[in-house]
Image 1 (cartoon, rainbow over the protein chains, first blue to last red):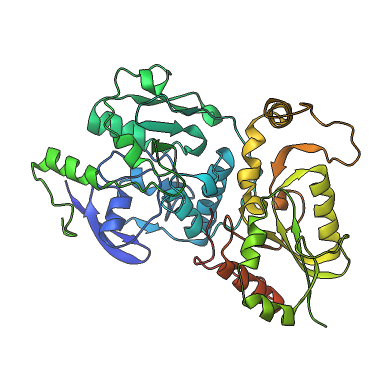
Image 2 (tube, rainbow over the protein chains, first blue to last red):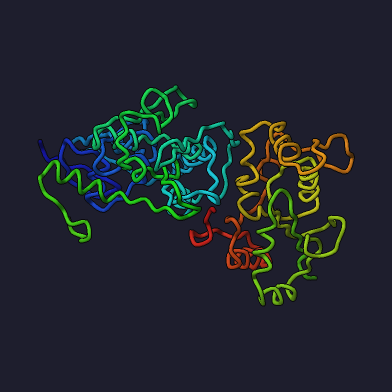
Length: 244
Length: 178
């Protein structure tokens, strides 16, 4: 492990060589928008919102899966990146069926918040209105694929933290969808422990608790920090205090 | 001359218009500042010409809405998508992943109490479009008021701006879906 120095948005910062640009930026109070990253889970670069510019290459890089180099010059908030981020939200909106007005997580939704952050007044690409399945076969939870943005937080938390690996992705391209076990109703899954972690980490209304009405459900992801810290450091942090 | 303002009701639940009325006593102030020349809440039969600002509630769901949308565009200087159904399709567009026939069958046959039949070939009944679309997919839209419904404060802000000849810049306070 080595400490490197680099420049983010004109500011000289330092970070460890095994950390992501996203983590280093966050440590220095530079917020990069993201939907698929969640502290405590591995990073996969699924949502592309954290794309950043790196001097010397025309390519854009996802900050969550890009490691720093000595002397790297990174920009996280340029006109081009803002345009692309809004475009990503437009694509996510058009590729699913997101009716905020009748959604259980309305007003508590990370996708909705990202639409506000990118000042999305309307979706300029045609809506696709895909036919997506809702599965309410589980005793406590519902998966509504209409609201899924394929961030794979559910897949990762189930595999990496719970250890059950109930969720995975089937299909390719626009036909990708989240499936349980061997693409069977969630309620018949033998691996699911009904722990509910996937529901809590889901940024949208794709995974929800039964019995919640419009706007009633608020996701809380604090538990992840508690479990992951306990497992990695043998420390049981107090989630009520602001300090780690 | 006071600005000529119209409001129209396409494929929506009228909730946006209810929210408009929810501006309460501010409506009296608006009445001084503008002429309401067409609206579901006043008794004018035909959409007039030479309109300054038109607020359009609802998605474009049938052929009558589509004709109306084009008429509104021709006769209005500023067209505003008024509420989430006009902006995104919202609840009106929830049927879009089903076929049109399945939707008609569900509505007119399966759920009918008497004389179950799908209305066809009635010149007075508009044809349901294959999909309900947001207004801006049909005509050019100049401004957007979000929400299901938009709050009275949002509408007041947007209309006040429009009456001053400005396109309302939606700060984060007023950009809210759902």
